[in-house]
Image (cartoon, rainbow, N blue to C red; front, side):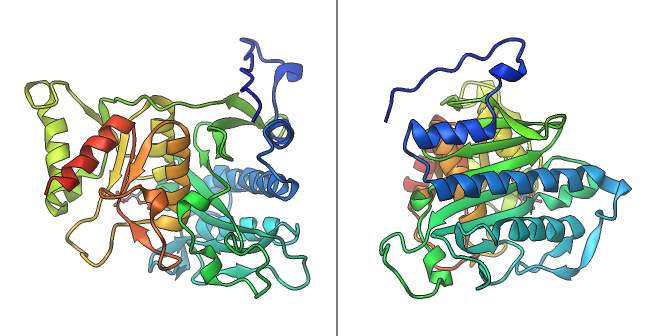
Length: 353
Ligand code: P6P
């Protein structure tokens, strides 16, 4: 690949100096050879869908989008109206373009195969259409998480119809991953394997504009992110790690820590990509048969690739999340990700048992 060109971010950005998402993707395609045309189209379509979801989210009580729907999703969770709206927006935006073979969503039990009336492509798109939806009604940041795989990655000439089995690839096989956080700004965060870039939605232009590139997570941090109310249910290594953080300067870590928990993975991970930190949602003994709360395919895998592309680390306490071979579409996983030295530490506590 070509040497990385450092971009100049003028203090007063003007239209001519702003890099749009489209230009960034064209340059990734042309300069870095990382982006086949169909994948560039896919990412443009997902970005447009996120703009539409952002508009629906921003309506709040002014539109008929708040509150619970009357249905449950495959996870047995009551769906919010916006969960269903966001899912439909992503399906409708992506099904006709000819770039996808199928989609999978937290909100749908089975995969959605592109209907025969449209051409089928080679990519598989997975998403959590609106993560953190318990925060919708209280006006706290939420987001869309997405992950892209290639169909039949180990058998490119596969001609049999696409099935769930095609999706069951480790996260290391992703060709693109990202999220869009609907917060004070609407920001799209993306990697295609050449580092992490952030694009802020310019609502006047209606386009995403590059605002950060080659994002780096500091290897050390003083900020951990976990739902402390579950402490008594955690495994011993996680209890040890968090107790050491709480012991602060007088304890074995020799420094004080701060804690943040938004209960919206997109918001917590965005903070970590922006200023460092460690995010943990570990296994706990309330439901020992469940590996964790978060889903591997469309939450942990895309976030883990982003974190690693930004110099961080992501494990389930015992192995790299991106190396996990999925057994089923909605598989759950224990998650520890963020500043590398902290993730390495809490992971090492699991192997000293
Ligand atoms: P808890 C949101 O429902 C979510 O899936 C993640 O976005 C978030 O990190 C986690 O669950 C919050 O879980 O148990 O703190 O409500």
